[in-house]
Image (cartoon, rainbow, N blue to C red; front, side, top):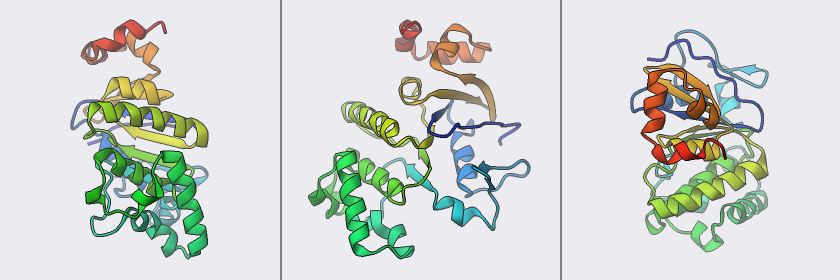
Length: 232
């Protein structure tokens, strides 16, 4: 259950949601996406408030990436990425051009785009999931622990590429992760959640140097490798 949550992500910035399992991170992301409607309060994207009437329009302006890519197993990577564009009536040349552009951006070869997900590595599937999320050129990107199941070495490369893509495209990003170092690397701000509430909001330096509660201190201490980076 979420309680008294108030967050604003500035255009072109990345906010990382972090916290222990069950604290409400993914639920909050689903509310932003319009998959769940809150009992009170509102979600607003730009000047438009999320409602049953506006949710489809707003979703077309959001890209959504989940753990393990969430690709349809019976469709090729190209078919997965073009579903929404075809539904909206894009031309085949327009779809091809967009996929070619995004494949280059995400370091996927065009031959990999014609493979089924089962023929791709976990890291490649996540890159395809990102292409699908970016296909309609949305203003907002939502990522729900997109690298949680990836091998550490591959995860490092994907983190580097995500950072580059965020910086290049200037999208507004809401990222859910359980890894504080990942949140610090990718996020302009971090929101630490506990029991459905925001425990602290700020950059990594404020978490290390000015923790607002014992819980924040314990959470940061559990990620000891970050403590020495407070002054960097």
